[in-house]
Image (cartoon, rainbow, N blue to C red; front, side, top):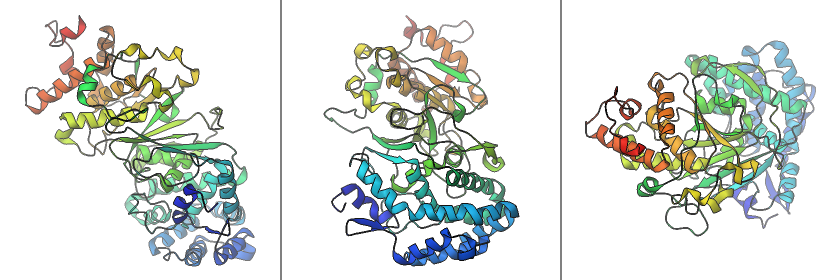
Length: 509
């Protein structure tokens, strides 16, 4: 095993050690895990306060810094005050010992993983610009998440590697801040429910994590980063676009890439105080968090696609009103690799772009970010010359039905990031069409600025526009906006004015 580069890259990031060709817990940590596995009669862990002490001792046994005082306070607050005494008793007598036994199996689970996985799919650090896939069993994912719950992952070097925080200490510490407590409590309730489920019945499927990269410059046999001229020349027809005013992306019924409105650091504030679209998705599908262990932050030409993450929780609300409301049984079918047919693509929008979102460089960055997320690398033969004749690929019927996967999205980068929903909707339509996706289902979340979106979609569709034609109009509108030539929103600007000749009639001939 020592010869495996994938294992060598991940070893500094995990709490087990490699010795004599085998993986082990350090002896002191193993003894403490064994005590926890035997239950409260042996471990004496019967409260959140004592659990925090046990986690502190485990960290010291692993030569990690002491558990932060505010995190210890958060563990005590959740298990001693925020959940019922009966619920806490179940945790200390049943769930916690099962988690300790799962952690004791972590070295064996990792050895089995590396024995079965090729180097191309093995658990490893996926640094920026390092395109590749990691395929993990759900049981191994659960063990890694148990490490995060117990705050056992080493933290040294993660910042330099541009990796997000992975331990749950900051998550629990945030419980102690009064202004974020209700939503924060319910984030933790989602994760507690996940651990209750996986310790009661071990999941047996798989989850894949893929870093997707649009290479800059000429690359043999791959898809490269298009410039504005390439987008302008595209003759690919725009795909069907459905406007949905209510509903949630995660409840999408059709097979689709479900867009995660991501931070460049995967997960964003999931393990701290964030509680918007990305963070909520990571709470109800906790296996997504595993990617935070080894996925470095995304560059402008990168996206992350995660396939197979199971959903465990029902919820209501958003932001400060977020609440865990119960169990969720995920009935999505499995694919040939044993992954649930849930495909989540993380793409990070420009943060507070103001004028940049109207400049060509800003538009180009956003459309290429979305294109990177939406394009299917397995169909790269159809995309080597993706901005030439659209006949280089037929419609979805010409390829396997497994490829008939659309895009489910919404107002990407338009909340805290401050993007323009009208522009973002068009940019994503362009990117999905160029990636040969068969449809876009767009959830407006009843945004008032998109009240004419359905009308615009019908108008563009009726006139048979291509990707290049819509791109041209976005660039033209954005230029006029920057120069002060228009104050209208894009949707209003585009449509003909009450019987007047449209400024874009040449596109319709």
